Image (cartoon, rainbow, N blue to C red; front, side, top):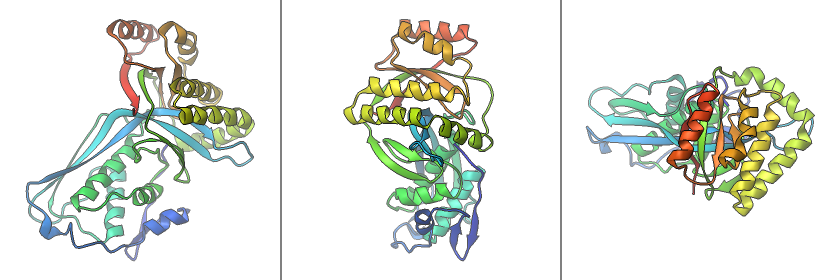
Length: 328
């Protein structure tokens, strides 16, 4: 879930209208130890930052039923990544990295720590498709920040990462290496859910794109109408995580996907749901404000099942992909 980039600088700090107080504090200028200064840089050395993306969400809805719901997500991490590399060179300081949001993230990082880029060049690579629900822009930002932490030999600080994200966009919790219940607009981790669960997926990308900002009003109205249903769904999901029951998590993910059908429907959802048992899938997942939809499986898929799934999705007009989601 992304929003417009709104970054303003003043007196060496970075601020944003409406920035949460905790995030604003973490963006204040800070002194750092002497390590990581330019004299420690070695020409030709490369440092990298890597961040995984998502296959949408296992849950997206209100944190709790009520008249003023927060949008809460449990992102579905995928074993696909964004990479950002920086190779030290000679000459004037390097420019900011490519990409508007990655450049904004780097600028905020440098202002926060009072640093200047050394000479060198950036390069990037991503396996994540843009605009379909894979958290590609958030992963790019986090990979950029991780690269900078390593470049300047600084301890990775999730609070700084959250503060930077809060200045740029709504975000997923890809900066964590575990599942989490996360308020995407407030940039707050409500509950960490661990890294014990893993799924294998068969998924497709439906055509079209969703402008998250344009549909936020519709989403919130939908959440108010169905608050109790979402509350039951989230309760079941959290119980599944607490007990390590992947099948229960998959059932709750299916319920969350079904609830989203009346506001941001997926064309193939009914077909996937009708054939779930035939393929032995535990559930159906979607990118709630994206274009992804697919099956959740408890184990690795064999060649025969992959062939059957490929034929099924092809009959619906889509080429399917396979990827591992979660951790474990």
